[in-house]
Amino acid sequence: MPDELHPRHLVVRVLEVAAIIGVVAIAIGALPGLDEVRTRFADADPAWIVAVALAEVGSCGGYLLVFRSTFCQQMSWGLSYDIAMSELAANSLLPTGGAGGLALGVWALRQAGMPTAHIARRTVAFFVVTSAANFFVLIVVGLAVFLGILAGRGSALLTLLPALITALGVLLVGLSPKLLRALGEHGADAERDTLTGRVRLILRAWLEATADGVDQAIALLRSRSFGVIVGSFAYMAFDIAALGFGFAAVGHVPPLGVLVLGYLIGQLGNLIPLPGGIGGTEGALVGVFALYHVNVSEAAAAVLLYRLLQLSIPSLLGVPAFVRLRRKLTRAERPALVCQPLGLDVVELPAKT
Image (cartoon, rainbow, N blue to C red; front, side):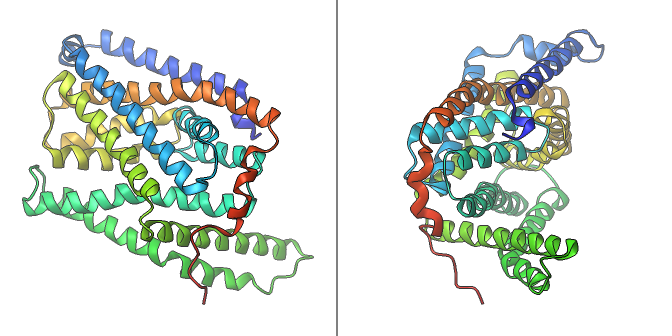
C-alpha cells in the first residue's frame, strides 16, 4: 500500500481537515466584518441544507457508476462501491488535487487481481471521461451565456474566453495520442543496459500507456456507454446542484449560467496542494462568483456550506468503505480476477499507425 494511504496517515488527514474546518468556523464566528456571513448561516434553511447533502450523495452515485463502467462492468457492485467511495474519501483528505483517489484505486485494483496494463489504460481513460463532462458543459454554457441564450452576467472575458480555451484543450486531448506516440518513438532505440536508456524506455512505456488511455476514453464516449456518459454527467451535475442548493439555503440562487461557469472555473482551486483543496477551492469559487457580480457575503456563505458537505459526505461514505475494502483484499482470492478477460479491453482501440 502506498505510504500516504496507510490508515494512520488517513487518520492524521481526517484530524487536519477537522482542525481546518474548526478554525474556519471560529473565524466566521469571531472575526469582525463577517456579520452578514454569520447572519446568513444563522438563517440558513434546514430543508435546503438537507438538499445539499442529498445532492452530494447523488454525485457520489454518479462517480460509482462511471468508475464501474470504465474499469470493469463484470466487477461486483460491492467491490466497485468500496473502491469508488474510498477514492472519493482520499480525494477529500489528501492534498493531491484528486490524484490521491486515483492512486488508491490503482493500488486496490492491482491487489484485487486486475491486469496492470488494463489499470493503466483505464485510469487515464477514467480521468479523461470524468473531465469530459466538465469540458463539454463549460464550452456549451460559456457560449450560451455569451450569446444571451442562457441568463447570466459577464463579459466575453468571463464567458467566451473560457469556452474557447476549453475547446482548444479538448482539441489537444484529441490529438494527444499521436503526439505522445511520436514522442515515444524517440526512445525506441534506447539501450536497456544504460541508465539513460532505461529511463527513456520507462518514459516511452508511460507515453504509450497514456496514449492508449486517451484512445480508450474516446472509444468509450463514441460507443455511448450509458454508465460512462450518465455517470460522468451525474457526478458533475449533482455537485453543481449541491452548490445551487447551498445558495438557496443562505440567499438567492444565481442565474444558471453564472452558477455553472462559477462552479467549473472555481473548481480549479482544487489543484492547489492542500488537504481536500481546503482554502484554495473556497477562495477560487468565491472570487470567481464575485467577478460574475454575485454578492460576496452570499457567495462566501453558500460556498462554505457546500464545501462542508462536499468534504463530509464522501468521507462518511468512504472511510467505512476503505475499511471493508482492506478486509476484502486480505481475505478474498483476488476478487477482480473476473476482469482478466478485459486485459485487451472490451472496446477496441483504434489501429495505431
